[in-house]
Image (cartoon, rainbow, N blue to C red; front, side, top):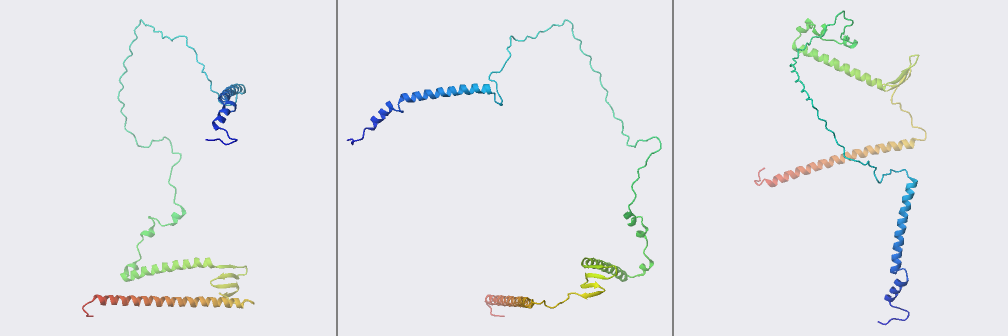
Length: 270
């Protein structure tokens, strides 16, 4: 192909750069040799500096110090002229027979210094009836044997009713104590709230105590009353609607069952 003015062959330019510039073979060989020499010098300098500075690290010896052995150690055997006597045979050991164990407590000579006794009953155990209490084994009175079976059952039932009333009275008294917010002064007057009443010294008023509408709050009170009545009216209306709906559904289901039964009966006899 024809070359345009100002252009040269690429092969010629590459050959000229390789012979004259940085891409020549002589330049690459020189750079490689200089790099190897620089690395060798750096390694030698680093080794010398580490030996002089001795950093605080674990150093491992390159060559282990070993002791040189001049020769092979020889064990000298000595021959004995006298014969060694054979030890005597051990004597036979008789079988040991254990004696019977004595489970009786050991007897200590002399008077006893202290006697171990069980602790006595506590105060609650002394007040509580036990098996040796005569009240548990006493015969019932003679009047009890004169009663008929019906009278005995009535007597037992009355005793249970009395116990039940006693428990109710105890529970009521405990509940009253929880809701008794009163105290008594030095003059004997009672102050506070209890039993649904207000105690003011010698005077007591029933609760709730109604007062008039505060000044300036009449409209707010009337609105709240109207709102409460409206809620009550709508709730009653909702209950009526639900009742009518349930009744209508029940009537519809009953009619459907009757129609289904009439279609199934082909005889026509009711």
